[in-house]
Image 1 (cartoon, rainbow, N blue to C red):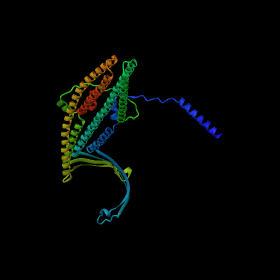
Image 2: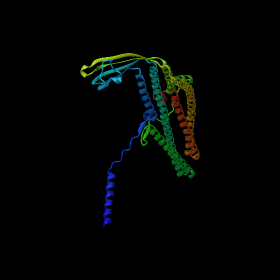
Image 3: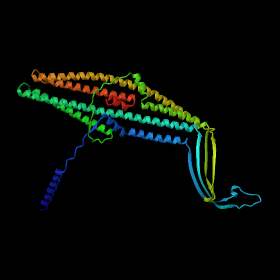
Image 4: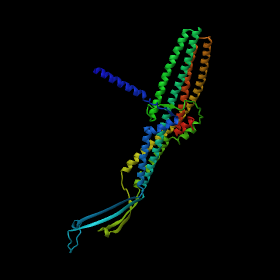
Length: 450
């Protein structure tokens, strides 16, 4: 009896669960995010850690610049106090011969309300220190821009990788379609008695191979989208759809010397080094100014009295000149700054040569890739013609499908060569955009998105 009751309860629960699953609406599938190259770059800049850290360093140096400027501005403070005290006159050496004074006077009260102000009139050391902090802030802004340029280049490469994988997937799908057509043709001719079973088997093998390649390319395409989403700050399970397919756009090339000259005024990393050198020069001037006189003026004004109702206005104003007579530390500081200046000069020279090399290498790769695209496009066209003629011969019964299968393999290699050549050309354009500086603008231009 108990067994029957438990069985009935179980069946009732299962029925209710099944009913709830039946009436429960299916979870709507998330629509894929349509992603352009410009969208990818924007998302990467918003999410990348190195860009965020560079931005924080810039904000930190902005605070340093504000603090350095404070040494050149007036300093104003206010103070007020009230006390109740007595004094030992003998302890202060106060006595009047022939007239005895009490040892301790008081208690008495004292009130003081006062404002103090100080202003440096001549302080070359603080002036050059402030200017050095301005150059440091400018250098960090340029370093932040350089970090952005690197991320733009990286995001464009990830997008290009996904475009290439998508192009391979489409090519593989096209080959599967062709192989399916070939198999049907072989089966039809076999049924008509004009083809052998080997022809059908050969077509089946070719279709299986093409499906295998398609599965591999689809997986690589999905993997590239995962990496793209991760580096754009998106959840890996976010479905993506590329809005811009892989395409070939010829780029007009300029003379290398002119591009190098232009790049040296646009490369943020090069300009950052130049600005850091200016900062060191200002620090050297500040170091030498430590032995210059510093002229300042300070004073105070307030109300002083024995009681709040009996206060009187009192004040002070004075000029002050400060000299440093001996300071061994300045000599060591001068040696440090001289060494840093030589180091930054070496870095500037090395980067100048590096910019020259990057531009010339990108131009060589660009020219070579353009020629490869032309050759690959020609080979692709010939391979398509070969496949069409082989299919016509097989359909006419003048040949078996060995020629068709061979032509399909040749077309697959030609399509892969074309995808590789176009991808290399696009990557060379992105490398040139990075080498020229202002990477985001140049990549948008080179990709045909003005």
